[in-house]
Length: 421
Image 1 (cartoon, rainbow, N blue to C red):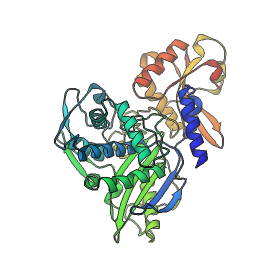
Image 2 (image 1 turned 90 degrees about the vertical axis):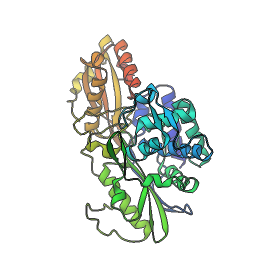
Image 3 (image 1 turned 180 degrees about the vertical axis):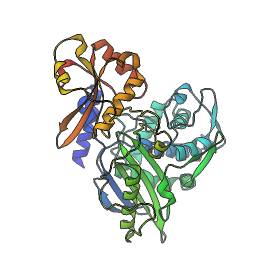
Image 4 (image 1 turned 60 degrees about the vertical axis):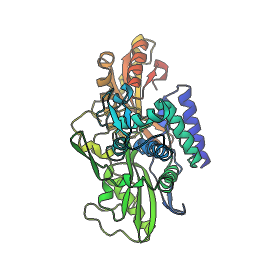
């Protein structure tokens, strides 16, 4: 456990001083899992449950916990209409499509988070309770400490990528149990299969709930940096278990892993689900779906034809734009003004790096249209990562491009000629 805390502290320290490159590579999407008895907290299965990773949309579980707190003490009511700000409107998918100046009913916001994993609705709740999203994130982190979530830090209410927003599988088992224990009245929201908003029926992203016996919640999540996450709870023979799987390689393999772990913890073998075999080992398959930062995992079926949004990615899946030749990378080591670049992430596969580069160009086309794509393999300890960069810029354009990308929620670090290793 100590080494994970040291890793997290080192990561946050590097971010604070703006080093970027090492920090980007420090948090590759890690496979981790835990299953606990919901009533007693007894740990039944522990697979690297203290590994530091990103929560993605599991973040919204804490947003909802604080919302339920506010409902309990009268600061909010389910029928209350909350204002939608321009900041809420600016959130990237997945979202309800709210517009600044509108209002959103509290209960609709709750359902939007539970089913659609709506980032704009998360901000509406955050601003209503904290004044600003950043102040609400501080409230979230304080609550995390109260609940025993020692390794969790929140920076936003939605789970959209932020390198400093970190957690562990063990911490999310604490939060899952706390939601059931402290807010049993509201926990049934997590069982909602769908709800109607704006004339559309929005389905719950937790597809495992429809095929695993006894499962009645809780939440899915996905970003490139986090991998495919799931916190889930199931009841059999009067016994409730909570499982958390982080860092899955695909939604299906993650769901299968959860099913296998729960079966094991319930003390019964897999019954042979009709739709897919349960894999007995940690995920080894890679998702073919579009990597959508901030999009919950199963949303990718909807947006498959759309370009990937690759924000704050610290390591995960990369492919699409051809990487620049290695000799070009070497040629930029001189002091020429055009030998700067930007790094938009470090990933565990080349495909995700290429997608990140492609999306960065779409977000800052005037600054990056002449830049050269470069996805370079590098070693970080025992792991291989792929640094996604755009090269051939001068310092001014590199820093401008990072400012634009950061404003749009992307991770970006300006890379000087001396850092181009």
